[in-house]
Amino acid sequence: MKKIFALLLSCCGYLSASSQDSLSAFKSYFGNYQSSNGRLFSVGRTDNNLFLMDYGQSACRYLSPAGKQTFTVGKTGDKIMLQDDHTLLFISGQRKDTAWKVKPADTEDMLVKADGATLGGTLWKPRGKNTFPVIILVHGAGYETRHNMRYLPYLFNAWGYGVFTYDKRGCGVSTGSYQPWDAGIRVLAGDVEHIYHHLETRKEISAISMMGISNGAWVVSDAASRLPHTAFIIPVVGGFVPVYKQELYRIHEAGKKAALTPQDVAEMDSVMAAIYNDQFFQQPPAVAIPKLQQLMSFSASRPWFSSMPLKDFQQVPTETLFTMGKAAWENELSYKPEKYPACEIYALLGEADKISPASQIAGVVNTLPKASATVIPRATHFMVEEGTDIIPELYLKTLKKILKEKRPL
Image 1 (cartoon, rainbow, N blue to C red):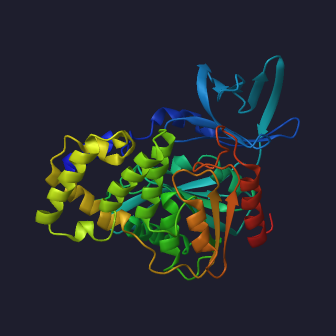
Image 2 (cartoon, rainbow, N blue to C red):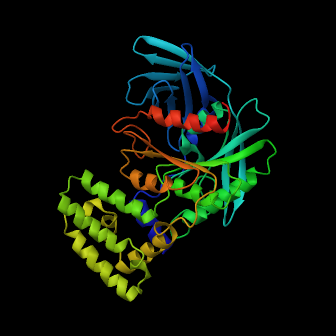
């Protein structure tokens, strides 16, 4: 059964190849840089790409190979050379500029024991600090490793914060499984709790906070609700509403993007709501499976079928689809916060987010004590301005303001 589930989810994009070791050859270049004209940059990696964060332009762009240690910067046409003396040479037309590494971070790889898994992670320690607060960075859904936090560890280190990044269970070097029939929000939050307790034994760490992105927003909120000494949390583009309501919103927006008529979108919403609710998967299989088969048959003939997740399961036996859906519902989709953290909450949301409902999330957050929600204009779910690779200036300024209030930068 698990092999069937893995095949199904790989078709839907939930599984990914492991990180490419070839990027490790550039590890000595990773860090923060300052150019001769005062511009600040970070160079780092995700699972599959190198990236350049340009703080002057508020843009994080992937680097494409263009020669030995030479890369094209995103779609700009500019080039960057990683030079043998570990400086960066920027080439833009006839103009060249050099950047030097500044205050590189100390990193320490470690293993953390969790329930049913061993988690591999990295502690990023700001140079020159005997004691420092740490922010645990928690990833979104799917296959995620410590490398997918892009520029955030470098940025927070530059602001005097330590950072802990880790490979989600079942990803990178971490054991266990993150798949929804094995783990859900509460299991992933349990992993964060184990990381928290591991870090609090370190004498140099003065306080521990958390920042969770997308699915990670639900995870940090759940974990912090059981960790009363958490300094604060920063949930980004997620959290605080039932997960299935977020998924219904995502599917609705996908239908609108596909230029369906309002009537077709409403019909699609009705079918998905008939499945994603508290009653459907509580029914006996003998009752639910025929209903699911009827909904699948009806949906397959409709113009909106290609916009909904059921399209990937047409060839799957309905009994298998029900079993998988029930497991995903119980572990992930049905998740609702049982209680909220007592610490300060700074939610950051995107006005143009078509995956998580910013207004609904903000409505909940703003009812909580010691909590605030900032909706970033024109920001998408990926916290870039709609149609660009530009990170909203307000997002970076708000992060800096939060962290400066908690600790002078």
